[in-house]
Image (cartoon, rainbow, N blue to C red; front, side, top):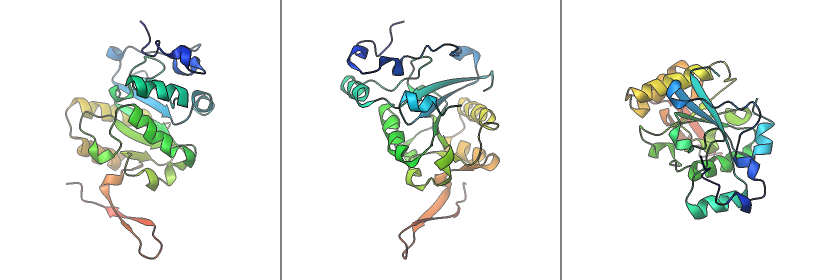
Length: 217
């Protein structure tokens, strides 16, 4: 199959960043799995692969921030960011997991969402949209990204992430409303779901203070 980026890859500095096909890459048949998750790294391929370090029922694919030359081509042509394994848009997955390694990549998270055709703000997403999940070292101070992320996984996610992905995908297939899915996951996993909390600006410091959880009903 011809790659969706084939028409312009000769115009970008490092085409291999966007093609995948590495030795021992795993690509699963979407009909043979129960859930699909995209691990999205908000930096270029070379940096992301030095950090990324699941379960037979889950198809796990990778996506990275494009460099400026590729981003310009994508915006000019109206093309989305694609995964390396199947060259599919991120919005087709059940869960998109962003690894937050340092604060300077927060704007790259928003850029990846925009390039993927996914609403930037969590409040603007519907029942058919993927779960936008963040984890990693800087997920412990999430407020700058709070309006844009559905849930932050606080702590080490490796052991619990497969179960979370499978539960979310099953609830999505069963037609459970988006907010109800978030409430169920927040009650079971160490998640911070910003829309379930009230926040206010402290008059003395100007800091955003997160209060007690709202009644989800």
